[in-house]
Length: 457
Image 1 (cartoon, one colour):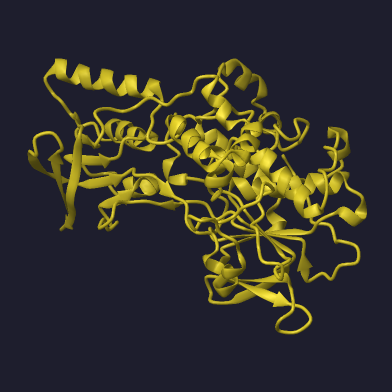
Image 2 (tube, helix red, strand yellow; image 1 turned 45 degrees about the vertical axis):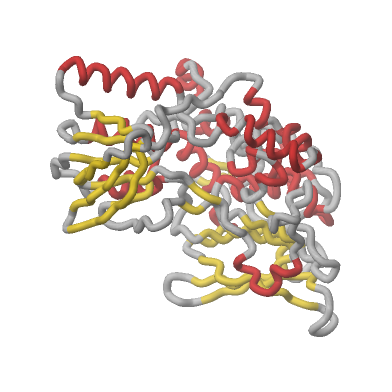
């Protein structure tokens, strides 16, 4: 069962103006919804917040295309939606295990890293408790200013315009908007995705189109965790196909998951990073990029290497690694893909005729203000053109813009490497709620105080 919360009415407020309007409902804004609900349980009536969330997807989903069997999380289950902020929350991963009658089994499992499938089920379980506060299938197309005291007056509210699949639109007014629209899949310039050229985000859905066939060759471009997982998955799924891993590195680089390096993801590291000079920020990101970017779990590296070695011993090398190699062209023709590759060492070229090519080339943060139109000019930027984001994740704005615009995700340049990761969602959501509520966070409610909440089954 899942705890369920309804949004309370704020005393003295019109029902048409929300305190919090979240754009996007992935893990970050799901954690925010929980933080708002728990704040309201502990706060005095005049400090309670009304909240609603808008999500473009038809239902809750988080990286569904990479929910590969046995693929594990890279973060501890304790870095869930709530535990680092409120260990007694009924929305913790442990509460989820108890609700699913698997708590003892997970203890015996002997690992702090659940599978990605299980963690996704946890997120869905938590999201179900807020179904009444989320509009799914709602694409936000505009965020417009609502001025008081005439056309030149201050912007105290924002109007968020939403479009649905049937063409209808809806408008919400809010005092604060929290943008958590996620990352955009990245492919190299000139690459066009299609029926046979995929981004790893769509791997499972696209592979389903190949089921029942016997592909002769599949290729994966990229050297990070998703790329290695895609190589492993395709090699196991299609036992007669040659699987080619193409990357510019000499080999997969292991992720640094050591105890001291992991401190870069601690909540206090956000304070350290935020106050550091710009040149120190750049050094920190450079020093610790190997905790997150273009790196692979050592266990998976070892597994792929052993599999490749055993194939060489057996004289049938079905798993190929084209290292220090770049892609020079990719063309989809008649149900096949011609992938032209070139050795960066000697310039030797080869064309790989493949049934499909997977680009596991990561994601990029996009400017979260594209929805604001001309109002984006009221948002401050630094000398490099990046958003000026305060410690509480609120964008610095001109004096006439008093409505709050908060950002989750696109804050690596100000808040550090954990900005796009799960590591700090629990703490970050509490900080945003405290900022919106106008003071220190309310004390976390005791578990017993939450027991009378309605239950969604």
